[in-house]
Length: 217
Image 1 (cartoon, rainbow, N blue to C red):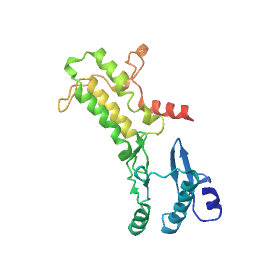
Image 2 (tube, rainbow, N blue to C red):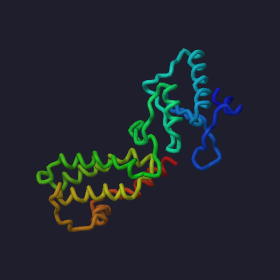
Image 3 (spheres, rainbow, N blue to C red):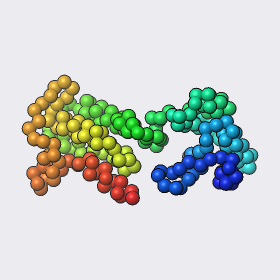
Image 4 (cartoon, rainbow, N blue to C red):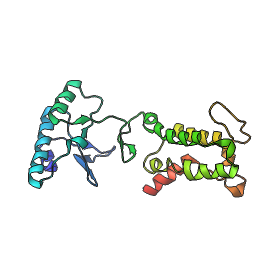
């Protein structure tokens, strides 16, 4: 029904990435993304399609779990008309879906900076002076390095975020916590070398990020 309406010019599709592929919907598991122009006419046509589907399938759209995302160029008046007729909420830019940002625009730092919060929280809760070097190594490798893995398997994270993670790990390793800054006797790059080369085998997050994305490709 969506494709037929698009062919007739009733609703508009959107370009997918930078290619010529146009889409009017994306389905994932039991979640659906539907696209159209943000005006009252196209929204009413899309609404009729959804209503016809409900009557044919006996499956009703759950308005409490549905939301509408608008681009930043949409006039406030158009937003108000569509939201009032749809009885849905507006989706915010930095909301998450399956634990990941649902929308990543040009401001990638704002989208991915929340990754640093759980890392910093873990390190604040660990009592550095009571943990041996072996214990620190285990905590950093098994917990801290694992936290951004899910993100890095989907997105190429900004270098600023990856460097910030490295800096947090470096401070924790040398015993810095809060306002107490300890001397860092070796550069982090040396500690990142394999143990056979005299390092501790910490991951290079930038290379690890690329490896995970290559695996997806």
